Length: 304
Image 1 (cartoon, rainbow, N blue to C red):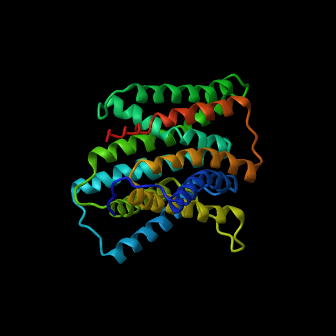
Image 2: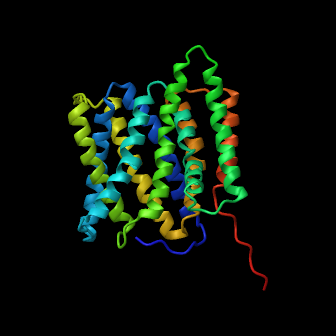
Image 3: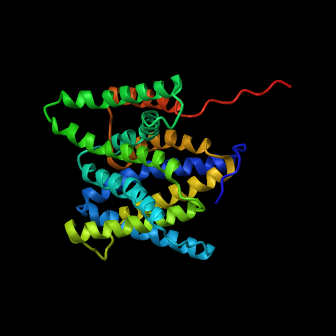
């Protein structure tokens, strides 16, 4: 699927964007629900990846788009599988029982700030005041979340918050790596399918070596349903990501981060009854402002 030049955002596209952001926000609440139900993290991720890989494999098969994996492609797919699936989702699952779902979504929304910071460090992007401002605001928002927790008697909370920061760190590094290492002649759907299959194989090995048995209840308790919802959320996010880019280009899709930021907090309130202190809401505002600086500036219209 090749992206077109940026086009106007229709009401239908805005609706898809809302669905994408809501799905990403819901994903963290469902991960927390599955973890609190007692399902092992490796098992949750194994089942999720099995469903995601199966759906993408069917899509690529129907399209007749399977490809021959070269050494370059295998290395690329393994790196993005670890950065895009295995490491961030395992970190989220490990921290989920101890960190509110809304806070996890807030921390995950640091992804574009991390991407900008990595790009600046690697000098793969031009240094500008917009990008520097985005990084500084992102750091400020992070401190607004971490510092109050470090002053509480339960200092271990900070450790689990730092574990959640693995999510934006790996996602941010992945986006920069993908932009510089994308193999020639591979479509986004081929990459999505290959990434999910490699991630499934890696997670299968990890689960067999370190994982606990996956419990099964024929009555389908809420934990098992949550795993299916996680898989559905991942599929919605990836498929809508490509669809929105194909319609409008790569700028509008980034606004899903704003939606997911507030959707994640809303889902946490609806599902778990989570309430947040003032410093968290200040961090949300600071991060939202910082995200605006990660977007490319609007081009000025040329004079007639």
